[in-house]
Amino acid sequence: MKHEKNGIGSPVRPTLHDYFELMRLPNVFTAIADVAMGFLFVREPVEGAHFILLAFFLASSGLLYLAGVVLNDVFDMELDSHERPYRPLPSGRIPLDTARRLGWQLLIVGTGLGWAAAFLNGDMHTGIVVTILAICIVIYDAKIKSTVFGPVLMGVCRMLNVLFGMSAASALFAGEHWAVAGAIGLYITGVTWFSRTETDRSARLPLALSTIIMMLGVVLLGTLPLLAEQINPVLQMSPQRWYLLMSILGILIGWRCLRAIIVPTPAQVQAAVAQSILSLIVLDASVCYAVRGEFWAVMILLLLLPAMFLGRWIDLT
Image 1 (tube, rainbow, N blue to C red):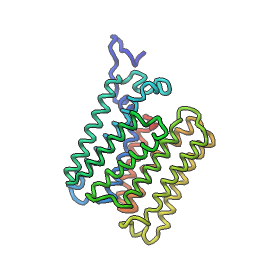
Image 2: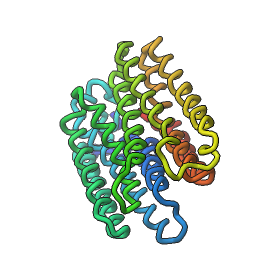
Image 3: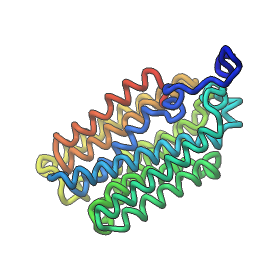
Image 4: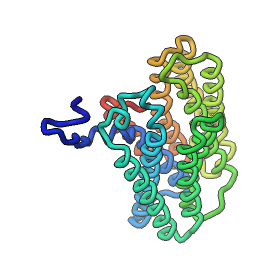
């Protein structure tokens, strides 16, 4: 086979596309959106040093996400050889040892950049949060993923990613921080549960229950005007605009999931999962709009462009 040997009998070198597929590259922009939203929730860059600090947060979060995806496939090698034989590792396009080294290197560098951000920010709880996040990523990939607690721990990882960005405030987390980060974590818990049987025909009840969890995450975000002190003046005077926005987003996400519940084929479920993942960027941008206004919300929304563009060639799920 062409993935195993070239014309002279030596292994074929992995292509850049193979590595991008291994890392599910389009999805990394959702992690970047999460940490950017967390950062902007607590501070607005107004000088060069702030932008440098933000860059460290974005790079650390992105590398940790990529590490998690690569290590996920490393630990899932045997399962994927049956369920997803076309993936880069079971198909032989990327050697297992190469992927294992890549995953651990990304994890170490990502954690190191997080600690660099902690030193730049002068607050060690940034480093503590990023270290806990890295540990949770490894535990999820190696031990918890296939258990009933898998979706919950994945949600915790996303919550920690948002809190990692919020740690730029150099202050203890307040109720509004936990509410926003928890809402994102709850949403991703539902998405992860929804996607668990995406390669087979799914049962309707788990799909319905996981959709409810996703919607609870959106509802929790809807309480933001009641919790945040630095809310957009327009929303402060007319909070119903925020409630309307969250309702529209919830309906759009829920409708795609409902279609998969009605016809729970792999194609329908995977389409719902892909839309739900990309919708995370929209939710992050909405929160950013609520606290920082239109400019930074648009900056986060622009992350949809590379995610959707790369998603034309690389599967999100």
